[in-house]
Image (tube, rainbow, N blue to C red):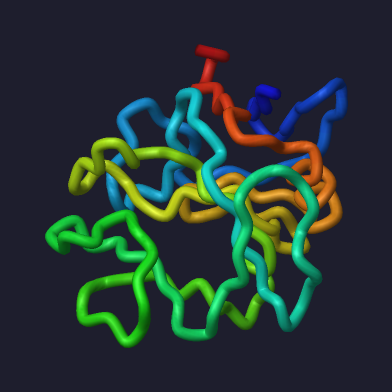
Length: 168
């Protein structure tokens, strides 16, 4: 299955749902900290979920529970850049155990993964949207129910295509 993101919509298997993208828009030349969502076609790699808030998700992607000490390194100078880490962690990182519910369910988008290029961008996820669908820091965000339904249909090898402005 190929999932398509264009502007503020996400399409899969004939279904269209609202989504949010990065505050920096969608860019081909994504860089760490620019708030942009990377344009291109990427695999969906792994699912994480908050076990104290939601049950294990269904679907065919590998899934695991988020622990309270989990983070994701966003420091381009650190060897763990764009990888999950355990907290406390000295380098800059994002906490995965969040109070706001945005990471209650997330899928890792395989952007800047093989190989990881320092500074090209990190922590690009498909995650839960804010209630007002406000912009993300570079991820793609959906309503929790839509995200859960989408992930229930995902299998290894499925991809997400994020269209650059102008549909490129």
